[in-house]
Image (cartoon, rainbow, N blue to C red; front, side, top):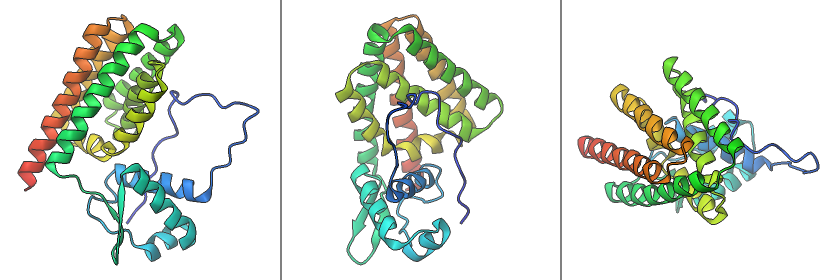
Length: 235
């Protein structure tokens, strides 16, 4: 199993406070790496996480690895099962429908509030992320595209200036990152997603809250429909 790396964090990430002390624990670093592997499909839904194999490949002991499992369990990405250990969660069609329905509501509210509350600088940052996403699409660089795409969504949620909304959205969105990444492996779905982004980002930059909410909700409904169809085809 090869462990690919995602590009560096997007510019939507806040600038670090020069006085802040930020020393992530080893468990947090391991959890972040496993999160990436789940997102890009290296660790597929239903996969049991082999402790010995992961310890060797990640060059860590079992203690931080098990702590990382607990972090991912809290995120809703793995379940810790008796005798099986940690297993990557596999969503049922009902799970997919429910999660995307809620995300559509959260993202719709977020972009509406962002259109009303975002600073001009925040909108410029969102426009920059969107441009990077388009560049990734032109180059057919799916990983660079995905980082900028998800960065755009997260930046919009933060620009709403609603901490409760941002926290709820970011946690729930973690649970479908792998699905959102996977949809870009379908060329037609990837192109459709880009067109959706063009519409809702344009409306946001024009501060048209009504249109922005309508377009981003449609985007999430399209994603839900795609994954439900894919799940049915697989079954």
